[in-house]
Image (cartoon, each protein chain N blue to C red):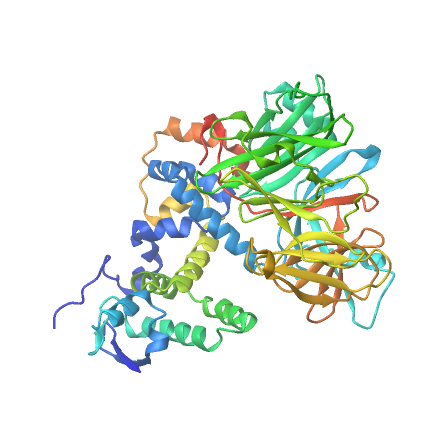
Length: 444
Length: 147
């Protein structure tokens, strides 16, 4: 009988079974490495030279990111970045990760007293979310060793944030930093590999063709998957002093690959009267940043419906997406629902239905559909976002984070240990760890 | 429509086409019209093939029940190293993406806490760094070696 053919080394005898990993083909080793946490990979940089090189290739980094994202998708409790307004109006950021209550560190007993006030027959379970970073704030200081300006940046805190986002494991925080000299710009930071970079905002010039006064700025951080580039767009809105109030918008775009800012002129938005509302009515989805805003403000006209202003990071264009006629006085909030762009309509008085509208086909205004109506049993301040497992995150009347399971109608209060509960949560975004690196002008 | 698969130790398995085509390798054979006779799988023994086919069948049966599938997958992958190794190679050879991912994840879990020396030992890797070079890399990334 002919011996069996094998693609790899033939199996060894029974006694060598535990050594079998020794003969894994290279391609499989690479597949396995892509599932390792970043900390392990950094440690394994010194295993052999080809590995050090491998961990820096765009292919491997992308593969690892996909694994990271897939792990998060299947995990019932993802890691979130939380931005809160704390004491003395300083904005702090916390990295949160949930701990299952069956893990070794069971903190539930400690918080037995902190059960929520409303305990319905639907049952409330307290879930523990622990602050991931030791110092309870994202410790930028350690990661910028030797850069005195940087360490001053974060110990003194941010006075005003105008950007807070996280894409592919890179956190982007922009604003006015309270240090000496003060720094107005943004920080790109990958906490998993401890790499950071600061970029100052450009000095913007008021357009001199007409008397204009700057009224508003808004920012967005995004990823261009066509050119594998990270970008920041900055919009300055000017009010033009004339008989009729009108607006002029100036646009600046930063590219990480080019490590520079350019001003965009070719856009119909230049003289548009479209205006973005406030910073927190926004969402990044599918490589496009979306803000809620208002259409033209003709004197005497009032619009009930807001519109979406979107910026496509790859094609670098602005577009408007309109909502259907909602005929309601409810507030809108953008979200992602079942991998589609969605709009949550909610009331600010107690226990009103929450309508969830979904844009079934992205970009097609006719495809807006009222997907479902939910009615959580607790009074809420505002909705935040959806999780894949049918859970809906909301802020209740006390600004506590509440998870409402749409299917089972169960309510869970998220207790966060490690950050002061009196703080006002502003923004909650997903975090996945990645190897994406951006030093030396390269983006990997 | 049933297919016949033959393991390396000459055992024949009769499988529904829907189940077998979870393997991209087998799927290609079917699409190319090469699946009329028994399909020989010289790289997979019967013990492993039986497990793999169980995975495939359950993925067809439980396709719509994500929770149940996850429970099945978690239990399935709790095997000893030798079996895991066989599953890994079989999933790679048969090109069954979700099994491959799951098996790789499991192996990764086993490796993640190890030191570089232990990794070299486990995977039979020769260290091609000079002691100075290795020391430099360690120094740059000291935090990764701490708890």
